[in-house]
Amino acid sequence: MNKEKFITDSLKESAETKLKIEKECKAELMNAVELITNAYRNGKKVLLCGNGGSAADCQHIATELMIRLNHDIKRPALAAIALTTDSSNLTAGGNDIGFENIFARNVEGLGNSGDILIAISTSGNSVNVLKAVEKAKEKGMKVIGFLGGNGGKLKSNVDLPITIPSFNIQRIQEGHITIAHIICELVELELYGNKN
Image (cartoon, rainbow, N blue to C red; front, top):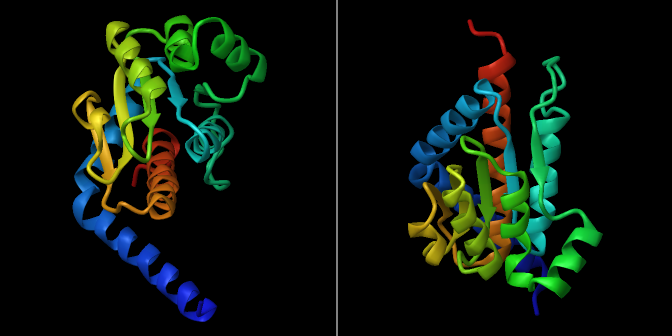
């Protein structure tokens, strides 16, 4: 294996994927910013769910919203909860009600009408994420999907699918955190930035 070529090819593919995001997902990113900004203006919150690397992204994104992203902007916390972080909750749920229900149960307990659920799945087919989306819809929440490939089953079940134009899981995950940073920073600027 030519390691040097592998590195070059990976970096090129990553860059090309981000350029495709700019062409194919810009309108969806603007819509996501509007949905989240409006929710915060109305005193609502953001919940996030996903598995594996997507679970880590949930924590990352919730932190950017709760703490802050742009250190030049002094602002209050924006309510955001990663449903992926409580090991007692997740293991009890997995044991007692089934792993496929762990996120739906937390959406049931924490979600309210007008809140936002960010559902993250590289395949778009994670059963526990699909069930969380169903529960969010029952509760009157809006759902933004961070997806990849063809969007899977989630694409038609969320209110706003943002599908990274790649079938490579690594590129999809890189795309998810890139769009998350863009969305979080724009929400921050919309709510607390200089309006000029």
